Amino acid sequence: MQNFTSVKDAYNIQNLVNEALLMKKTPYADKHIGKNRTLGLLFFNSSLRTRLSTQKAAQNLGMEVMIMNVGADSWQLEMNEGVIMNGDKAEHISEAAAVVGSYCDIVGVRSFPGLVDRELDYSEQVLNQFLKYTGRPFLSLESATRHPLQSLTDLITINEFKTVERPKVVLTWAPHVKALPQCVPNSFSEWMNRADVDFTIAHPKGYELAPEFAGNAKICYDPKEAYEGADFIYAKNWSSYQDYGKILSSDPAWMVDAAKMSLTNNAKFMHCLPVRRNLVVADEVIDSPNSIVIQQAGNRVWAAQAVLKEMILTLM
Ligand code: CP
Image 1 (cartoon, protein in one colour):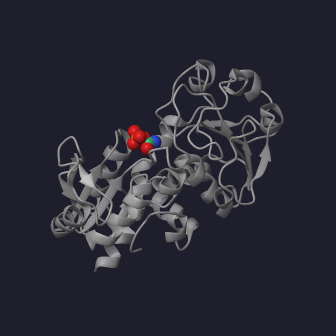
Image 2 (cartoon, helix red, strand yellow):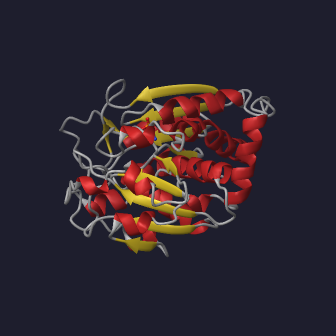
Image 3 (cartoon, helix red, strand yellow):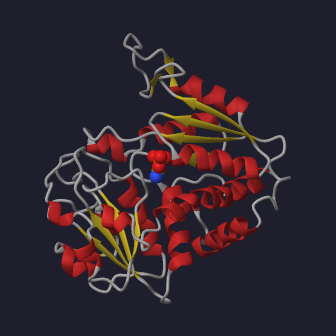
């Protein structure tokens, strides 16, 4: 695997899931393969899970890890070509990415969308500039439109916890006080469209994902109807794609609560975290035995480790 930016970079998603689950049983079996290799992790945005799990995964493979918060620890980067750099950006991506590439064997970047200019965000400018200038294999730690390490984690977790061969998986929108990106739902949908699951996306009208991400998912505008018979309820807020970056609803009927969970097939509750309690999900659900959010977050290590192993093997 040269780069990991979307499900399209995974040749066989089930093999990747199996590899990750094997690593969970034997975390240090490949400790030798990352020797004398360096992973650089650049964060334009905050992180708890992605930062620590990817670092842990790399260490399990014997890699050295360098981490930088871009902008806070380093110079502000100019992403546009051909501009007169007389503003607040002190360094151009062309030099910065090339320099990072000269220090590292694999480069990971997290950069969220601005949620102002849809065309710019969906062009994946930051990701593509790093791909262009680092000259190294590239690992997405969440880009403007996708969060593939999270989605692989989610698929691993569904494989671990499913009780029927082809589970009903429901991605449900939930309220939030801030306008959030579509990255997690886009990516989750993209991966679920490739997986052997019965997949539904539930949200209020106006929150339709871009068609290339929704794929063949069933769309449901009634949360109660969507929850019927579900094996997994995956909650996430996102802002509107159509009315780009806007909050169109704060309807509390979309919060995940025990009443709606009682309509399911004893469904497991999932969320990528961080999550706002009693806004996105009621305490009674996230604190229940059906909540697997901690196990899900734990699986971030094995998803990252499986991907990094594939990328290191490409370097050999
Ligand atoms: N789910 C996730 O990516 O968590 P962080 O934002 O804390 O990395």
